[in-house]
Image (cartoon, rainbow, N blue to C red):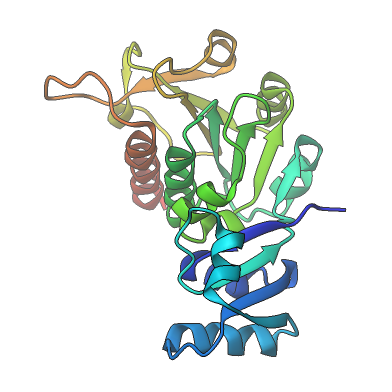
Length: 249
């Protein structure tokens, strides 16, 4: 049975109600609130058959820990997070050339949440994380993702190298990012079935991950800063991929 996680705040709960209402087990909303957004969330939850309970500020504070709950918290099963064995099923459901984001050890939950948010906005079909070398899909990550973590398919791979090789067997090219890459992002054809592979904060891609990639690309830097934050770099790369796909459509 999938363990429940808490969704905290307007964005996370609203996104789950919109795209994964069946995964919400319960909802707690602030009693006697006059907030219009809270009333809308409560009405949508009730319409979806979700058990809604009124709660005091103290009860919500206890559930949320140190996070700002905005008067609403939900219990969420998170069935969009799957083991690597679900890779084929997820890719089989994709229409057109798949776009996959692979995060090789992103450990800061705010960076991971930002990467998920950008991935969802850029039309990524699947995000793959390392199970043991990455931040998990925690409430902090969900909040930073602003709703993307509730609907975007995520695989937590126990063996990332094996999962990358499985992608290649499916005809998906692997484009890793590296500060030492000789090929520039904007001069590389990224329009086909693709997995963008991003490294961890500080150390970048692990050696084996980089070796499995079909090619490595770098983001040209015009200033004195040597590298970008991983979530910013992810956004730059994903939208260049989108630009190329639109240009070739």
